Image (cartoon, rainbow, N blue to C red; front, side, top):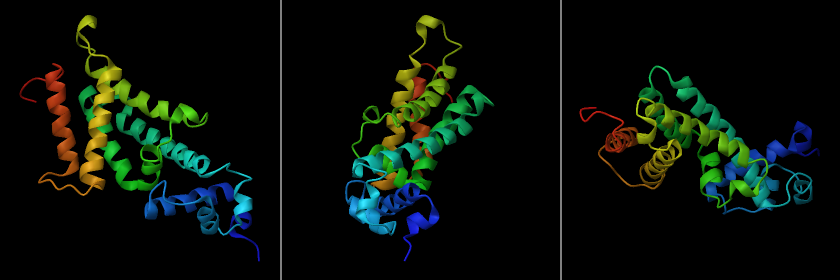
Amino acid sequence: MTKRGYHHGNLRQALVEAALTLIAEKGPQGFTLSEAAKGAEVTPAAVYRHFAGRDDLLAEVARQGYEIFAALMEFAFNDGKPSALAAFEATGRAYLAFARKYPGHYMAMFESGLSPQAWPDLAPVAAQARAVLERAARGLSQHLPEDKRPPGSMVSAHVWAMSHGVVELYMRGGATSAFPPEDLLETGIGIYLRGLGLLPPDR
């Protein structure tokens, strides 16, 4: 009987799909490479033609996730239109939308313990996603004198952390709130931006 991975001609992607299913069931560190092989209907030995180990497979899942994530962020940013603020807020909502729609990729990216810098194919695409949020953050402060502008990398890091916290607590962590995650994030971003002087008090 022909194994499914070879029959499809793309064993590498079949293993990624199997890993995504296992991540959803057991978490990114809760499965073995042998289980991924079983999910792809190939022998464990065949897996090593494509991946050196489970972390190598997780890194590929994360890489594909970052590609999707970066594309969604770029689409949400929309080249800073219709306004710097609207584009910035859209990137925050895109973060939540990604976590909701692609939970397996999200967990491989942020909950697997992998450092993007340790994987040559992973670091550039992870940086691409961060760069979109940094561009959005820099756009918010262009009206300020140069010596008064907060660093875009700092603003984007803070908002990324805030977005991540909303996802972990209120979308994945089971914490309850009277407000939808999107409202929590938008309100939090508003308070933060007002504190930096990037929003008027009544916004």
